[in-house]
Image 1 (tube, chains in turn orange, blue):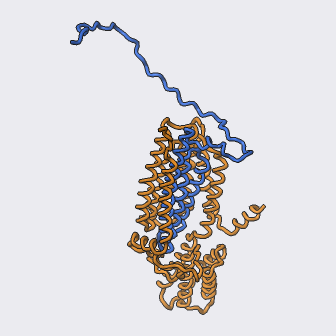
Image 2 (cartoon, each protein chain N blue to C red):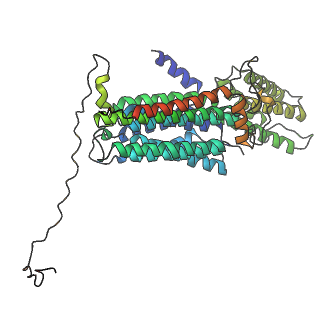
Length: 363
Length: 142
C-alpha cells in the first residue's frame, strides 16, 4: 500500500531520466546475475553474458555520465569497469580458484581508483595486504582443501532468484538515494549554461540592448528555477539562498529599466549561490561543539564556502599523503591504532589456537 | 572542464557492495562466501576514500586503514576456521553444516542432478600386427 502511494510521488518529483537511468541497468544486471549464477545447466549462458554487457553499457551511459573526456574520466571508466566485471565474475564463477583470481582483479582496480582519489599510501597498503597476503593465503587454503576438481557445491547456488531480486532491489534503493543526495550533474548543467549567458553578455557592447533571444537570459533563468523547484533537496540553507537569488535575477531580468550591469550582477549572484549548493550537496556538517582536530586537513566543521579549492572545485589534499596520514593516525586515532594492533595480535594467536592439532601422545 | 564527480565513485562502491551481498548469500563454497564479504568491504572503502577526497580531509583514508586491519584479522581467523571445518567434514560446502540450523526449519536438499561430465572418446588403439622378433644374444647380461 505504501509503495502504491510512494511511486507516483517519486515519479512526479524526479525527472524520468533519473528513473530510467536507475531502472534499466539494475534490471538488466539483475537478470544477468540470475542467469549467470552457477547451477546445473547444459548450455553456456550466452544470454546472461549479453545482459551483463548491456547492463554495463547502460550504467556507464546513463548512471555515471561525467560529460567530460579527460584522462581522469578514461581511467575512472576503465578501473571501475574492470572492478565491476571482476566482481561479477567472482560471484558467478563456479571454480573457487578463478573466483579468488577475479577478486584480485577487483582489488587491483580498486587500487587504481584509490590512486585517482589521491590516496597512494592506501593503494600500496591494499595491494600488499590483499593481493599479496590474503589472496595467497586463500589460494593456499583452496589448494589444501580441494584437491579433486570442482565439488558438487560449487556448481549450485542457494536460492538464486530470491538472492538476486533482494540484492538488486537493495542496489536500486542505494542508487536512488545516491542520485537524490549526491548527483550534481543537473546543477552542473545549469551552472554551465549560466556561465555561457554571462560570457555572451560581456561580449555585447556596454550600452547595447541585452534583451532578446541572443543573450537567452530569460529562458535560462526560467529553466533553472523550474529545475530547482523540482528537486527535493530544497530544504538546505544554501538551496534556499539559491532560490532567492534565482527569483531576484528573474525579476531583474523582467523589469524594463534594468541595465546590463544589474543583470550581470544578478547572474553572478546566481552562479555563486549555485556553486555553493553544488559544494554542499549531501554535506553532513558536524555540530558546532564537536571537538575535531585539524591534523588530517582543514577542520571538518569549517563552512564549505571557506574551504580552499582547486580549478575543478575539489579541495586539495596534502601532497605528502603518507606523512599526513601518519600524523593523523598517531594524533587523532592513537587509541584506535593501539586497539588495532592488539586486535591483530589476538587474531594471530586465535588462528594458531584454532588450527593447532592437540593430539595427546601416550608416554 | 570538470573532474569526475563524487556521485560516480559512490555508484561504483554501491555496485561492488551489492555484488558482494549476492555472492555471500547465493554461493555455497565457504571461501567464495568469504571473498564476497571482502568485496563488500572494498565497496565501502571506495566510498570512504571518495568522501575523503571530496571533503578535503584525510579522515576517510585513516578509517580505511582500520578496515584493512580488521579485514586482515578476519581473514586469518576465518581461514583457520575453514581448515578446521574442512578437516572434520572433508568439504568446503556450507550445506554440510546445515544440522546447525534452527529447530523446525526444513533441510535443504539438492533436487536437480548435476549433468554428467562429458564422456571422453576412448583413444584409438592399434591392433598388434606382425611378429615379435626373436631377441638373440640377450639371454645373458654378463
